[in-house]
Image 1: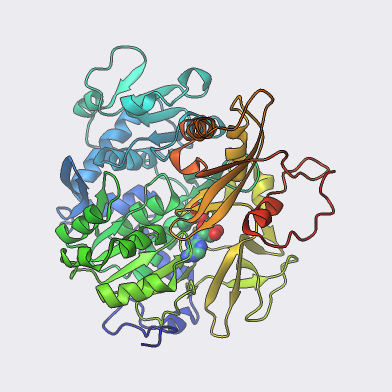
Image 2: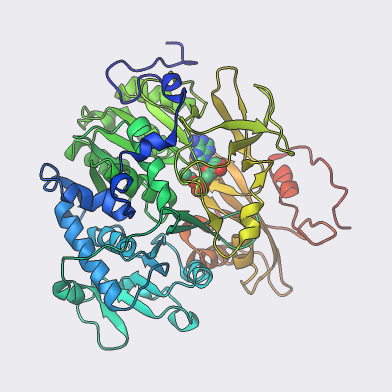
Length: 571
Ligand code: PRX
C-alpha cells in the first residue's frame, strides 16, 4: 500500500466534498440549525439538551452513557434536562448570578454534566478543573477567575485552599453523606428538594460560557474565555468532521478539565443529539477496548499517546474484542505518527483522522474527514469558513512548502474572546489580522498542513500542555532547590517528557532520595502530569543578562544540538 496517501473512504458522509462545501460558504447558513435563529433566545444548554428533550422522538434517547468500573448509568435527554434544571435551581437559590464564575473540581460522572448545564442555565460561566490538580493548580485558577462557587467532592476538598480564596463564597459537595452545618452545600440533599422545572436565563451569543486555563511559556496559566457563540462551530465540526449521524454512539476520551472534553466531550455530540459515552476510571488498553466493544461505539475521539499505547499493547489483544461497530477514529493534541495510521488501517481496518486546534481556538480548525484523502504525517486541511496560512513574524503569508507560523485569519465562531483579566495577553496573539498559534508548520501545494513543532517553550507531554514557568516556580519552592529550568525532552511514547535542570542550595547534596522528594513535591503541589520525569543537577542554570532562563540552550545541550546564538548569555 502506498502509505504516503490514504484514499477517501467510500460510503455516504455528511461532507462529500470539502472543496464544494467551502465554495461560497457562509457561517450564517449554519446558524439556521439552532432554535435561537428563530426564537432569538440563546443558551447553549438549551440547544444541547432541552431542545432534544422537547422533541418526542428524541427525549427518551440516551444522551449520556456513563461507564465506570463501579457504576453504569444511562441518562436520557429528558432526564438530563430535569437534572440540570435542578442544579440550576440550586445555583439560583444560593445566589449565583449571570456572569458569575462557577468552577467544577470533580471526577467525570453524571453529576458533573448535570452541574455543568445547570451553570449555563443560570447564565453563569463554567470553569471545569482537571481532577488530578493539586492545591497550587487549584488555587491559581480559582484566584484568577474570582470564582464565587465551587462544586467538588469531599475527597477533593482537601486540595482547595478555602480560607485563602476571599471570592469563593460557596462550596457544593457532591457525594457527601452527611454535611454538617459548616457552610457547605450538600448536593444530594439539595437535589432531592429542588424543582425539576427551571426558566432558563437567556443570554447573548457573546456572553461568557466557559473558562479553560491553559499554559504558555511564561507566567501562570491563563484563563481562555469562550462565549455561547462557540456552539456554532461545535455543531458544524461535529456534523462535518466527526460525521455524526442520528444513531451514533460516540466516545471522546478527554477529561472536561481540558478543552477537548468540553467542545467535543459535551457540545459537539449533544448539539448533534447523539449518544455520548462518558468513561470513568483509569486508562488501560484492556478497559478501553472493552468500553468500545461493550457499548458498540461507532466513533471514537482520542489522543496519539493513547493510540501509541494500543499499538504497543500488541495485535493479539485487539483480537479479543469486537470493534466492528467503529466507523473511524479521530485524534487530537499532539502529532499523530504515520505508523499509528498504518496500524489503524492494517489491524483495525479503520482510518484515523487527525485534527488540529487549541484551547484558544475553541474548536477544530484543521482536519481530516471521511471523504478526504489522508496524508499520514499531515494534520489535514482547514474546515470551511476558516482561512489558515503559514505566515512570517510580520504576519505576511508564505508560499507553500515554506516553514513558518501556523496562523488563522481572525474571526471564526469559536475563537476565544479574551484572556480572563488579561486583554493585553489576548491582543498579543494577533499579528496583522492573523491569530498566530505558536506552532510551526508548512502547507503543501494541495493545502495540507504539516506540523513541525512549537515555536515557544510550551511542553506537550502525553497531549497535555504544560508551561515550564509553572513547574520552575514550584521547583524553587522546594527547600533544596535554588534555581530551575524546565524543558520538554522528546519521548517516543509521550511525545515529550518534562525534564528539569536544577541547582541546589548550599547544604544539600545530590541523592536519589532528594531527587524523588523534589519530584513528589511538584506532583503534590501541581499535578502528576506536571512533575518532571527527569531531574538533573547542574552547577548553574544558563540565563540571559536580564535573568531569563535560557531553556533553548538547556534543550540544545540535552539533545546535543548546536547552541546557536548565545550572545545574550550571562557571564
Ligand atoms: O502544539 C499544538 C498541539 O497542541 C497545542 C494545543 O494544546 P491545547 O491548547 O492543550 O489543545 C489541545 C487539544 C485541542 C497546539 O498548539 N496540537 C494540537 N493538535 C495537534 C497538535 N500538534 C500536532 N498535531 C495535532 N493534531
